[in-house]
Length: 384
Image (tube, rainbow, N blue to C red; front, top):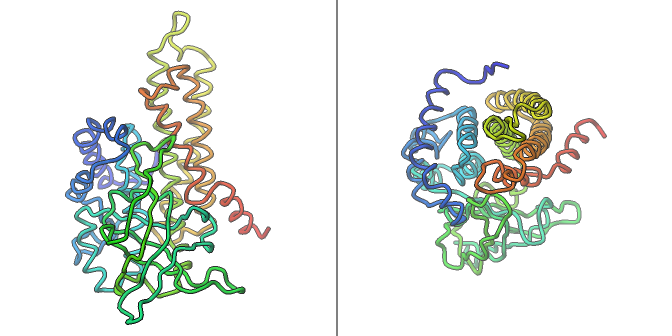
């Protein structure tokens, strides 16, 4: 089906991203995977082409309000090439909106120009004993006796892009939870990653997303100026939920783009690979499997395109985003599995992009809220 989501301006942007990928990413990507880290210099180059500060007002060096379509184009072009911009999507699509929504004027002047130029942002919510249940956060931030700073202590885990980040938004407890409200007492702080007492723990070894650093963090008496409190004290839990629909939309967009890329990689492979003297594509099973995959991906694509339109209009609800994420990620999981099967034994070899897609896509059904959490949200929206 012909998509109607993009204009000529978006397609011109696509061409620019495609050229950047071919020039700055594709030649180096295998080394980045081996290193389990993308060099920070990449983000400076991304800043130069204007994709690190979407929605940042012009007075701070940004482009102003920006359609989510541009972020979707990046997801489509990087997955099509079998690469990624790594922390760009997390920093720009997930963490930056916290600053745009909650930072005061002084904070925006202090932080946003650097972000536009390529400073990476990360967010630290998950703890060793706290995943989806953020009300269980135990990291503390205690106001000093003279009221000039908070003292931050605690630990976080599964933190994406922390080692490339300049600033980290940390969720910490500033007041005890109450029997009536376990969510009470959480606050958000913007913490420079070079702060004394801010330490990196293990760089976690994952089965997929090998190019993305995922780390443990610890805070030992980190002094955070009161000027770095983001939003109001003790209201952090409500802030954390405000960006979840966009985050889940972002996961859905990437999942569908990955599934579409898998079909493309597989189509090329089965045309070239011969079995019993003829191309794998000549077998009816191959054609039928890819036909099923194409139909599923187009359905998921139509759904995510609608989600992007809703996001641009400010109408994407939590239930909408849950449906998108559930359908798109489950579809991608099925499609990529079928595509790997059509590669035979070679599909299990990391030299083929389908193998990396298979491993990378599995996390989509877990992070930003698992499929089970998405079903709970949808059921609640149904009044169940």
